[in-house]
Image: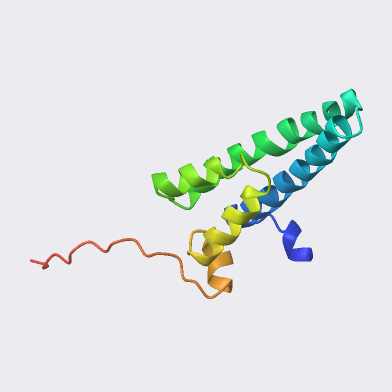
Length: 126
C-alpha cells in the first residue's frame, strides 16, 4: 500500500487521483441512494461537493498535467478526460493506460514498455 501514496512521478500522481476520484464517486452514489430511495433530500449536498471539488476537478487538472508530462496523444488525453464522467471510469482508464504503455514506469513494472518516439533518420556526418 505504500506505493499508492508515492507521488514522485506524474504516473503515480495520476494513479492516486484516479482512485480518489472513484472513491468520491462511490460516496456520491451512496448519497444518491439516500436521496432517491430513502427520501433524504440533503443527502447529496456534501458528497456532491466533495466529488466535484476534491475528486473531479483535481482529476481533470492532474490528467492534463500527466498528458503534457508523458506526451500523450490527443486521443489518450480525450479518453482520460471522458473517463471522469461515468462512475469508476477513471480506474478503468488507469488500468487501460498501464496495460497500453501510457503510464511510464507503472506500465514498465506491468511488463508493458512505453511506446517509443519515432527516431529521426540518421544524417550522414560530413
